[in-house]
Image 1 (cartoon, rainbow, N blue to C red):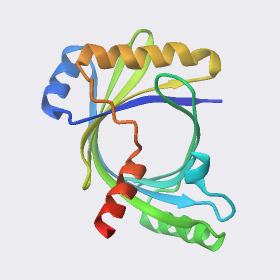
Image 2: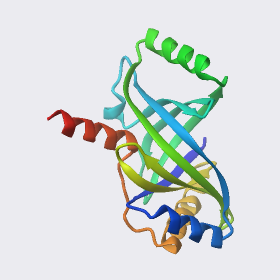
Image 3: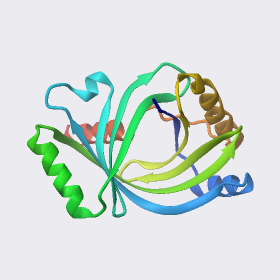
Length: 189
């Protein structure tokens, strides 16, 4: 079982952070546009169970992702299962239509521009994402993948240590989905 271990930070200066990452030897990955369509299960409320299920477009690539409930600890840690499927908008729409027919309901679409960096840090491979989320602002996420419960403490500590080294302090505990839903509620009231 794999676990995503991450911390998100708000109000970040992407240029300053990119320079600091390069100085540490991080490898930049080309920027991509991402579109996440979040779905709710027909028989249980993922907001109530603290789970997430989404279809993601990354350019022409497509993925379906399940994120389990949050685990205890100093970082956002949860089981993540992500499966790529055939590329292209037609395949994306077909899978979206299939989930619709099965009773899944689309609750939100979150769009962002992501520039990623990869860095070997404390004997772990970390991904640092600089995100500009549509209507939400600029963020940075530091993420490690733990390959089991025994790996969680090291992954969590590496994420926190890198954040401290980069001077990141404004933790954003909410997911992009939650921030999007809260913004939508404020706009509707």
